[in-house]
Length: 236
Image (cartoon, rainbow, N blue to C red; front, side):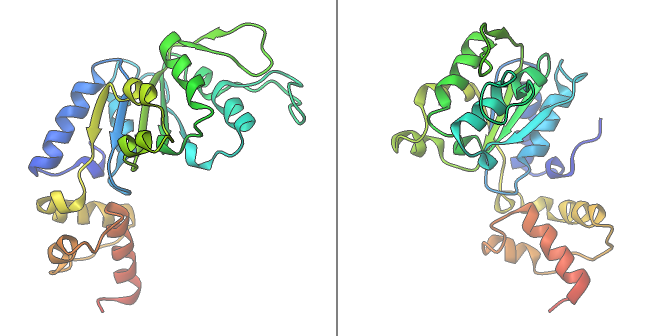
């Protein structure tokens, strides 16, 4: 199975991360992926799914930071029945039911509205969903992988995230390393970024220095932007 390019490299940091992802994939527990923006959390989630016993089902993905309004969030997660609210002209199947038997990846879980968090916890604890307007709950068997670049412990202390939900989704925690912790991997990552963009560029001689100087707050995305800039503007 081809390793996604964010997880390639021989540095101690990424090697340890791959081992943890592989061990997590063999279980059916929720996985929480932590790390700075652009460290490859979506690719890591896909890798866990690909290595898991649920790999025959497509991973359903959603970014919770894009959701607004409790009714809409509940509908997206758990679904709704016909005419439950204004505009609900058809029955809608929520993410948990769509991912039934497979894997649900919720990115930016730290942005989930606190009012919705108890329902998510109930679904994870009891394996049921309650679509808006439904008379009876429905059983689901969905494995959750969540990700965030937020400090969830700090969010708990600030009252924005439930501690019991953090304990539930954080059964297995894997932290994706930043570029500053894996500078040995830069040549391979540079080749991977260029390949994805259809570019053939030599790695800048000062790239390691720039990374260690905190010049890449978006990590792999920052590396990708640099390659594009060089391809257009040349080395400045």
